[in-house]
Image (cartoon, rainbow, N blue to C red):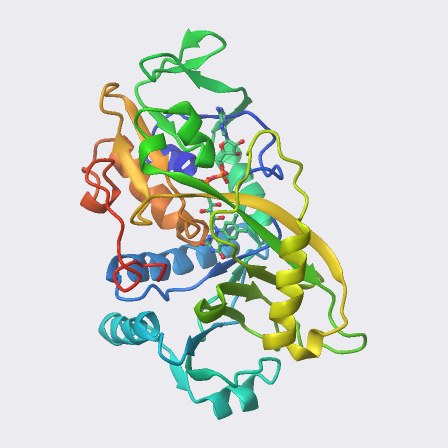
Amino acid sequence: MTALHLQRRGAKVTLIDRWEPGHARAASTDYNRVIRAISGRDEFYTRWARDSRARWLELQAETGQNLMYECGALILATGGHCDWEDATSETFDKVGVPYYRFTPDEVRARFPQFKVDEISYALFEPQAGLLMAHRCVITTVELFKREGGVVKRGTVTTDASERPMLDGRPLEADVIVISTGAWMAEMFPRTIKPISAIMGINVLYTSTPDGSDQFDMERMPCWIDHGQGSFGIPSSEGSGVKAAVVIPNTPIDINNDERLIERQSLNKTRQYIRHRLPGLIGERVVDSKFNQVILTPDTHFIVDWHPEHSNVLLAGGCSGHLFKHGPAFGDFTAGVAMRDYGTADRFKIAGRRKLSPKESPSGR
Ligand SMILES: Cc1cc2nc3c(=O)[nH]c(=O)nc-3n(C[C@H](O)[C@H](O)[C@H](O)COP(=O)(O)OP(=O)(O)OC[C@H]3O[C@@H](n4cnc5c(N)ncnc54)[C@H](O)[C@@H]3O)c2cc1C
């Protein structure tokens, strides 16, 4: 997205990736990702998500590809732990994001797939939904090429001063934007590694009941279930129902691990399904992904110049919520790279600190 926006701002851009765009080890892989404005009391990301939603829809119209499905998103607020959900509705009122507040009975009536016995209330954002992630990546790369961008295969390394190198020589360009996701930590051991942690996330896809369309995206929304450390996406284009139960601090070796699901994760997901989605009891796992997020202490993204190399811009630090913001992030980062404006304070490398779940945009 950043490459596309740089190209659109008049730069001559070469996109270098060590693997084929869309490959399975990137965080942007997989069938789908949730897009929702829900961000607790964080107005900035709420507005960015709304802006990105409009831009994804424009991209969809421009390319004729099915990039986004507006199936809505449901946040389940667990009794006694509703700070993030309460804050979200205040922010929505302020920014003007449409939403409903449902009682548990209203959830049962509207979305009978969910068992909500311990839920205090739920927020439903009808204009949220899912992005077909792999298709979004491929479509954007194709658009970038169509608009004159060059895509090259290559592994960028860094020297002892963290200067980017390609094939043993310093990379030469007016501006070098590094958006290498979780690989930013190993490339920048002094600048990025100290402010980041890499965590593995296991995701399982479960079959939908034979002869029933209850768990398809036309009938069921995406959901966020902080009380259970979980989120999910209904079956989209035959994917099966995606449920992720986040096991904090799951280690992952991003270069060497087989991308196979762990038994612990399988058990936890089955347990979760029994608790929250009883209509899927007895259904089988039909697909799975093991992937990474790179977290900053405050879960804010990174868009900042390297402290020693004045033409190197670092852009990433996904904190598990960057995909949806792709269009706004790419445009913003391209503007910083072209020096049309400076970066935002929250995206600076210096001064990172852990936020309480109340302050954090992700509620974690
Ligand atoms: C399971 C899971 C669920 C998620 N759910 C959501 C969600 O619902 N909604 C949401 O908004 N976000 C979600 N996220 C987060 C989102 O997917 C990421 O924030 C986003 O995809 C990060 O994109 P990226 O471009 O920064 O990194 P990546 O997609 O990892 O891209 C980095 C690229 O850099 C390349 N690269 C790496 N090193 C080098 C090198 N040395 N030289 C050249 N190229 C290199 C890689 O090959 C790769 O193509 C989720 C993440 C995971 C893992």
